[in-house]
Length: 251
Ligand code: SF4
Image (cartoon, rainbow, N blue to C red):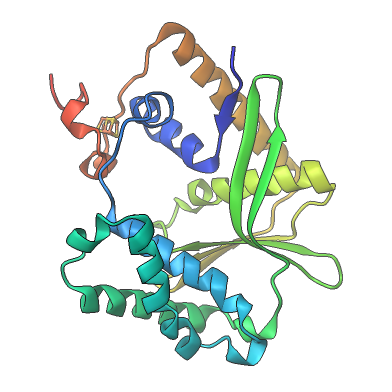
C-alpha cells in the first residue's frame, strides 16, 4: 500500500471530519476559493519577504509597500481572484491592518530568522510520512530553537489552545527527530486579534504527539481499507466546499 502522506493541515482535516479528509486528500476534489485563505497567503508572503530588507527597514511602511506587488503576483498565479475581490481598496486595507497588528507583536528589526518557509519531513513509520512548511524557525546564537507560525485569523477560545498548538508540536517532533534538538519555544501569532500563544514543549509532549499521529495514521489506513469515512458535522460545515455533496447535509 502507498505510504500515507500527512501534513498538519491534513491531520486537522481528518480529526475534524474523516469525510472532509477523503474529499480533499484522497479524491482531490476541486474547492471554492476562500478569500480568507487568500488574504492569509498574501500576509504570509509579505511577512516572509520583509526579512529580505535590512533590519532598519523591516517596518510597517516597508511591509505595506509590498502589498501591491505581492498582490499582483498572487493574481497572476490565480486570475479568478480578480473577480472575487470586488473592492480592492477594502482588501488592501484589511491586509495593511493585519500587517500593522504584526508590528505590535514582534519587532523583526531586532532578530534574524534562520529559516522561512522551511520544509520539514520524516518517515514516522513504514506506512506514514509526515511533512509540512514552518513559517519561521529561529535559532538563537546560544542554540535555542523557536518555531513560529502566523495566523491571519483570531486565536482560539480559552481551552482550545492545545488543539491549535498540535500543528506546531508536529513540526517540533519532526525537528527533534531530524536534528536531535527539542525546540525551546512554539509560538502562534494571531493577527486577527493581536494574540500570541506560546508553549514550551517537553519530550513527553512530543512523544504524546507522535503516538497520536500513529493513531490517526492507523485510523486513516482503516478508513482506506474499508472505504468508510464518517461525516462529523460541526460549525466548520458552513465553510466546507463539500457541503453540497456531503451525506450529512443531503440525506
Ligand atoms: S460538510 Fe461538514 S460533515 Fe460534510 S464533509 Fe464538510 S465538514 Fe464534513
